[in-house]
Image 1 (cartoon, chains in turn yellow, brown):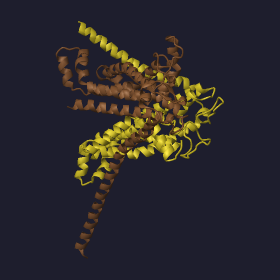
Image 2 (spheres, rainbow over the protein chains, first blue to last red; image 1 turned 30 degrees about the horizontal axis):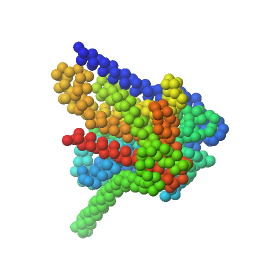
Image 3 (cartoon, chains in turn brown, green; image 1 turned 180 degrees about the horizontal axis):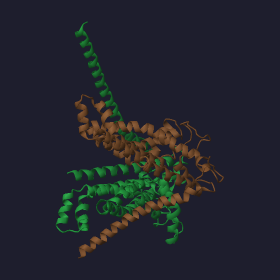
Image 4 (cartoon, rainbow over the protein chains, first blue to last red; image 1 turned 135 degrees about the vertical axis):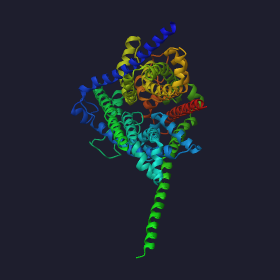
Length: 286
Length: 305
């Protein structure tokens, strides 16, 4: 009887844990949206910020967030896909491959503040980009690379081996096989991975404070990659930690809601087309 | 009309075309190797540059002072980082103590107990946990958790190890849940069926068969969670209080390695002993995260044999 009793207790505990886990998530999202949505207005989202007076907007920060994200993806996606292809399609189990895998895993666990300091030494000081959008984007690339490599490798490995064999048997070279057969089939997985990485990069703060800075250009939009590049997340931290504006709670709430909406959007909307794409691709092959 | 010559010409063109393709194949292969090898170059560059900048601290500060002294007062020439090191250790341990049991319970629930529709809800939910920016976690901690601790534990500020650990415990949940769940799922079904067939209840099967069999994966998830906790910066900085003193209790303001770097890096001259000591803290963080990777590899290798 007692073992049955323990079984019941354990089941109830597990249910409670699950409810708690979902509850925490829902309350985080709800809190941020309830507090932040009323702040959002055209003027707030696209307006210029103010250092001293209430009523400033976050237009430049919003622009910088996406501009920097775009630049960092332009730098990281080709390299990461290349490295992922190497690891999935070419690499054996030698010493060098092991070193590359170990490097990728290590890079993925380097704390982002350490990457930030590294970016500060290399991109900001040595290469002389200064605290700028370009400096931030390049440092952000270091953060994105290991995640994208892993995602690409997993997506490529999920493609059945007989696809490759069929292509090679028709006389295609290895590169032709990868480009025409393997990559198109792995594409939905890679796109999903890029989407999730983008969400993570959008909210990143520690890495950008000393590489992209806590100020913005006076022009909007400013495409100059050497302009100062404070992002939404950095601004949210800045107004709470150092900022002097009287309405800093409103600003932080508004940014919080913007970030949550963007991330919900990326997670829900962009992953669905990837699934549809996958269905269409696999559907057309049978 | 010389048919033979034409055939030769065509076959030569085809042959050259094929040669060209093979040449492309080779070049592209080198390109891919270069991309992959870039990962190694980057990680070595990080170790070298952070290390070189950080180790310069020891020209002015003795290692004993840095690691075992808690007196941090850069303007007076005191660079004891002990309180930050202990702060990071305490926060990480406490976060894992709170977060790991909850995450593990969630993982067991998702793998073996949850009805399938609920599992379909919890999968994306754990993804969302990862996607929420750390500054948002910090902000919610600052505006809800800190006042809550201040009110209900009768302390002055509410900032400190407790607030930081609770926020971190929430932030590491998705790491523990997703990796542990995969590990539990990967246990061969035959083991589970054998246990059930012997008359064991579901809980007995989970606690005595599934969890022990999945232990390497569960340990991996906990080590990865620790790596995330020790490196987390913004959320911790917002709720820990940022006072360079040893924590006397869970509710007094203190600092960690990461929070101290963020707070002070902006106003230190690059290359000074002060600036270098912050890089040395970064080096400590870097080495700790590397050690964790080695630990995970050890666990994985034991699993394989």
